[in-house]
Image (cartoon, rainbow, N blue to C red; front, side, top):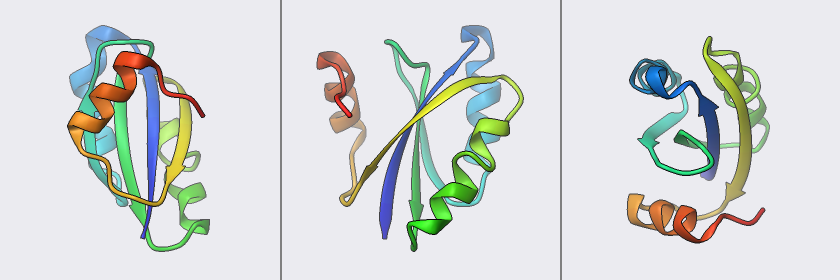
Length: 93
């Protein structure tokens, strides 16, 4: 299983709506709202690396209201605490 963290920028007033749309995408396991440089974090879990292209640029970046995305691929599972800590100090790619 491959885990990818997708950092998402959107309009602050649309965060709940955009989060709900992203959470409904197959392969997206969790969506968190955060305060910082990005507005949302989506956790994507897929069986094969090739499947990430379908989920991230193919579906997430095409959700109406998503201004931009940045992807970080990891081979472990992150908790919400891990993600919040990463954003508190700045996530390096």
